[in-house]
Image (tube, rainbow, N blue to C red):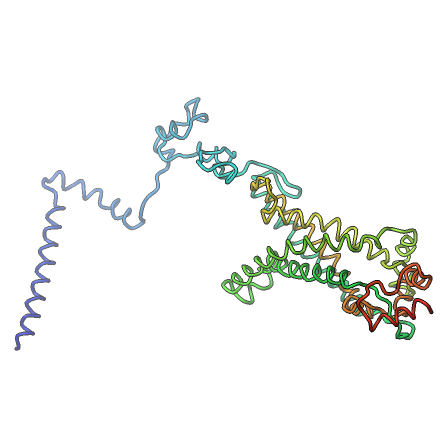
Length: 408
């Protein structure tokens, strides 16, 4: 046997001896000194083993002081007084928290107006029960805005698909003349495309944020969905101000041709001729486009932008309390769903729904036949010289044709 093996055995025996000696001291330290004392640990042994098996045991506060609640002032006790008669009973504190009582905080109200308040007071928002404000907001969002808003968007998409399947693209009845009329100037197209792109970014990101967990999360998983929604949230926040500014430009750019006229009543009564197949004469913008302009761009647009600026905390001087953000979120959700439902029809008519409509916004020009069939009153004003056929000085290629059209 070599020296290394001998040393290894010695170390092993020393370690075993140390463990045995330690166990002996431990047993002797727990051994009772007297027979009377010996009986007590044996009696308590089952309870100790039970506690060790089940972990920390909670105490029933009413078992600690079963008669404490007979005190006439029991219900008026503060948390310190209750702790003296029923240790661990913090009901007075949580009752105050639930009632919306503000605690102490050293943060200024201008920075954190609700820093000392844990739970908001009771309110009843439209569609919610009488409950704390946070829970009321959750009920409105989850029980009304999400299910009914999502259903509305699906219904609109389905209706457009069925209409397209039944009617197809609205074609021109006459042959194109080759003579062009300028329908949109470069400024008008730039304003429209900026606003349209911002709207699409906001709509896509908003739909994913609001409804994505129902149809995207199960497919791509939580991790990828988290990164995806975080990216879209930032896209939403940056596209919002761009949409607001472009919306103002769009409004003042197109307002002169969107004032209501008596011909709009006839157009509305006949449904624009979409079902009859016969176009109803209209000016540069028909009654349907004017409804989108006044109700969608101005009405819902102002509501969406204003509530969005509140949610982005971009309005100076406004105190951003939780109730303010909750109300702004509910208003924003309802208004955006209605705007998307309305603009879906506008997008359809401006793309695959009508021949030449997309080209008009892309190039700025339409054929004389298109102008006469879809906006006959506007075409007649151009023919009469009341409106110039070429409003911008830039297009040389179309200028001659437009001038010829106006003088024909």
